[in-house]
Image 1: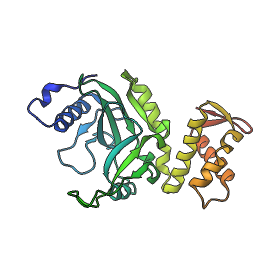
Image 2: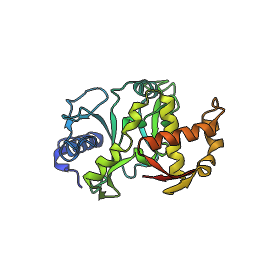
Image 3: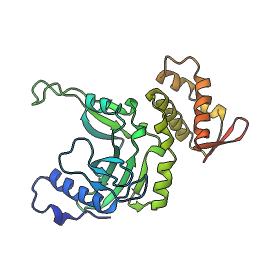
Image 4: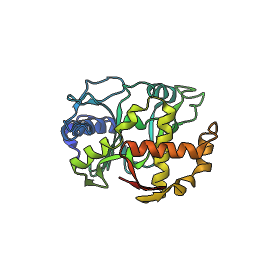
Length: 253
C-alpha cells in the first residue's frame, strides 16, 4: 500500500502534502468497518469528521503519523475533545502510519467511538505565556489505554487484514454503544484491558481478581470491586465477547 506522491507535487508544506495524499488514499481504498461500503470524504473544513459512510452514516476522523504510531496520538484542545465525548455524533477515529521516504503505509486502523472515554485522554501542559496561544491546553489520545478489541487493523505491520476480519472485529464491540453511562463503559473497557494483560484465551475468576487493587485505585468510590468484576464479566458474556466454560471458568470468543 503506497501513497501517490504525484497528487501533492504542487504543495510545499510537508503537512499539506501528507494531508492530500492520505485523504485521497483513504477515499479510494477504505471501507466502512460497520457495513463494508466504501467511505466518502466530507467537504473541506468540516469540523470534526473527515469521512462518512454513505450507507450507514458512520463518521470518521483521520489522523496520520510518520513512523510508528507509538503509544500516543496528538489531538486538539483538551476541553473540546472531552465535550465531544458526550456527543453521540463524535466520530470514529482512523489512524494511519506511514514512511515519508518511501510513501509506504505501515499501519492503518480504526478506533470505534464507543472506546472514547475521558480516561484515554491525556491533558498536556498549557502553552507558555510567550506562545501565540498562551495558556492553550492540548491533549493526547493514549493508545495503550484502549483494549486490543478497540484497535481494529486494516493494515498491521504492512500486512493487509482480510475485510471479513475487519467487519467481524467491529461487530464484537458494538454492544458498548448500548451503555449510555460513561462510567459503565469505562468499567467494561477496564475489564477488557485486564483480560488483555492476562494474555490468555482461557482464564478463571481469580485471574481477574488479581487486578482488584488496580481497579480500586481507578474507581475509589466503589467498595465492591469483586462484585463489579463479576458483573462486567457477565455483561461481556451476555454480549458474546466471552463465554462461561464452567463455573468460575471463562473463555474469550
